[in-house]
Amino acid sequence: MSHAARPARALALATLAAFAALNTTACATKKYVNRQVESERLARAAADSAAGRDVAQLRTDLTALRGELQTLRTEFGARITAMENSVKFAMPVHFAFDDASVRAEDQAALERFASVVQKYYGGALVTVEGFADPAGAPRYNLDLSRRRAGAVKDFLVSKGLGDQQLRAVGYGESRQVRPGASGDAQGAELNRRVVFVVETAGAGEATTAALTMP
Image 1 (spheres, rainbow, N blue to C red):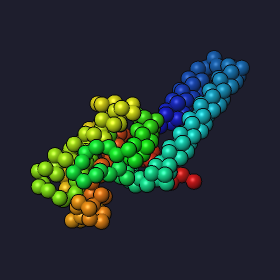
Image 2 (image 1 turned 30 degrees about the vertical axis):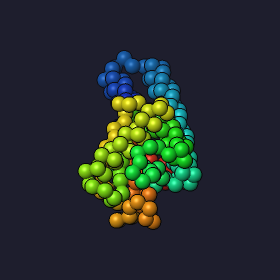
Image 3 (image 1 turned 180 degrees about the horizontal axis):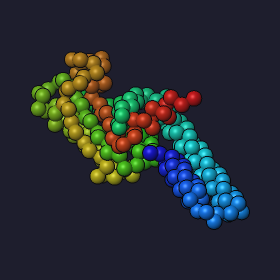
């Protein structure tokens, strides 16, 4: 039940109880009834006003989130996929061949991502998924992908996200964007990447609402 619905339902039950008491009390006078009706009217008006403020604030928050997500898309090339209780951010954060360092050209995108998480996904678990291109042995690629995820996690912590909020995992050369591309081959950089998964109750619904609102 929504925050706005709870006071409305409570008010409705209180109204029914008040009128039931009036109907079973023989000594109730017209003046007393009028006072009760006026009291209920004022209470309903207050509840409606509070609900209106809640809706207005929600729309303001969603509009702000929409703007931030659009910035991640247009300025930084992020691909955002909303699911039920999670949101996947495929950011254009890549790595040099056989390297796990966060590149200077990717820091602005990571800083913006950290800011969005702090503002709109507080308390969410953020998983940093690291990947590698298929050059080298699978075991080595797995370790390299973990180091990449760890480096990005450390960078996000330096920008204000909590260490306990972040989880770094590596998937090696799996889920390649450009199958088989490695080293200096065209598209190989796309395989050397990180992906973020933000998990918290309602994250997907809020994100979808923000992206689709008129």
